[in-house]
Amino acid sequence: MLLKKLAALILLLLLGMPIFAIAGRLSIVIDDFGYRPQNENQVLTMPTAISIAVLPNAPYAAEMARKAHAQGREVLIHLPMAPLSKQPLERGTLRPDMSRDEIARIVRDAVSKVPYAVGVNNHMGSAMTSNLNGMQNVMQVLSHYPFYFLDSMTIGNSQSRQAAAGTGVKVIKRNVFLDDTANEDDIRGQFNRAIALARRNGFAIAIGHPHPNTVKVLQQMLPALPSDIVLVAPSSLLNDALSPVPAPSPAPVRPRRPFRGIPQCIVKQAPPPVYADVMFQVIYSSLDQTPWVIQIKHWFSSAPDGY
Image 1: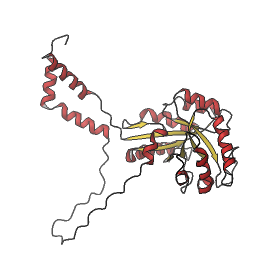
Image 2: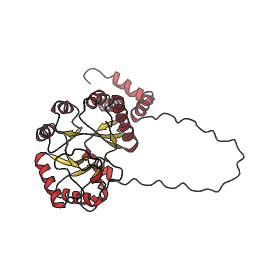
Image 3: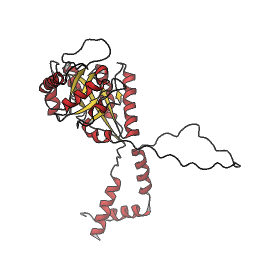
Image 4: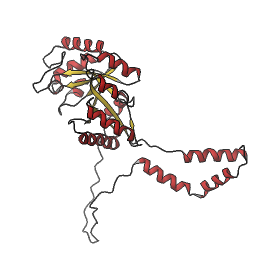
């Protein structure tokens, strides 16, 4: 009888435990670290799954990389690359016309200035990342390091993945820029867009910057992150992001027959989505009223003290 009631107690506890089904993983990377310690230290108070990308020639590059690593955060080298537009460039900016040896020297210097880095992403770079030959040189150089490459996708026709073929360098791509504008409402909208993409695709990568409004929005929204979304470091998405998505099977073509029935009713508005946490709450509520669960509760309530 004791064993029976003990088993019933365990089962009841399992049924009563909150159930959180993870619908999507969200990776957030904050770029441009190394110039604004006051703002950047606020980022370092946020969940450690949020990663940072450090500009190698910034005055506080090594300091911020060490702080982040000590917290268990993932550190990336925010490697400057040439844009299509004319604007001031960081020292050591990679250009498509550079030789592989010159790129290797700049990468080696960046590695020495950003300790504990496990990946690289591009700072600007629309001209560089869209140049296949230039990116092939970059990937050949990165193949000598244990780095992955996070493409910031500053241009739609980036050649990073094609250039990495055969090098062993894994490439993942940014899905959302959080702060294309400094407007708080826009940043919130982009954060919610990243959540929606994570739910739909299983994962999403969002990139932001240590601007005051970005920091403010993250401080407000991260504590209210939905229970079916989990924050992860970019490296945990490498295999998922590289897996090809199977093409949907074509629907079988059936011969048409003359229609003689009632016309089909078309739903004018799609029903709202039901997320995993709501679904499991409904399931639990239904199970809670079943006879066998009620019997288990009765066994437990009738057990003598000490059991």
